[in-house]
Image (cartoon, rainbow, N blue to C red; front, side, top):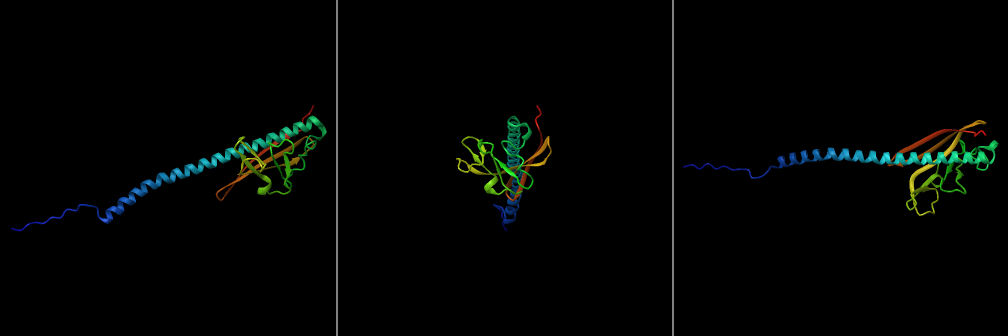
Length: 183
């Protein structure tokens, strides 16, 4: 009598294993890519909101200085006692809204260097300052402003906040017309 010998495979072959691993990797890679892109977009959105708030903060401070100048001398609404007119396209200024005694510094050129325009994140008081001696860390944000056109009763103020995410340069620009206060 002849015996029929049958061999049953008791495991996967190498090819079956490789196919299973490939399917598993494809099914995992898709959601991970989507999660990574979502996280990147969230970080960019957070930075853009912070930059918008920093620009608005500087614009409000400039308007406040205009009001204080007008209270001091209505004829010199942009120059006395704080000289806003010296901040032009070619001679931008930086502003520290936390420094009451000396809030504006001229940076003398159209480009901000890290030393002059960088903001420091003061975690203790939850504010951005230009004071590197404060107990904070250097942030990714640079802020400057300038007045692009001036007439006797009106000026255009432009605030720029720049930052770098990876290798991408980002910028938020806020422009506002300010007017001489008439009494």
